[in-house]
Image (cartoon, rainbow, N blue to C red; front, top):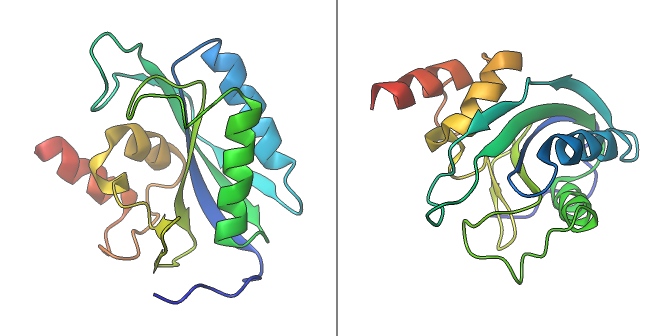
Amino acid sequence: MMQPPANLGTTLACVALGANLGDCERTIASALSALAQLSGTTAIAVAPVIRTTPVDAPENSPDFLNTVAILRTPIAPLALLDQLMRIEREHGRDRAREAFHGPRTLDLDLILYGDLVMQTDRLTLPHPRMHTRAFVLEPLCAIAPHAVHPVLGLSAQALLNRLKET
């Protein structure tokens, strides 16, 4: 797919937040504050934080705290991804040293960016596994149950219902 233009105007973006190392509540709150401070960005809604069991994680991994934030932002998707990775690093995440699916101080995933569908070597939108993850869909449904997955054409609530059935 082609890369989107550098400036797409103001867009609603959904970011999933998770943490399971350190003071997770403080980390999530600090990350939400950092997201709201991104240039021209406003947090429109933030879901209640939920506690979840790690998925595909090594045995004895601590539970995660998870939430989703909806941002109104002028930042283009790849630039926003860079900002998310910067915020992760500022909160102690070192992707090079951590185990795949292992514990982490902070995980920020760009889940949706408006109705944009894109695939690059760095970013796939919508997030390729969002529809299989209750820890993303449950908080998303708390604030935007009618948000539509632009590839599957189903609402977040329909995706969550389908996931619970399987």
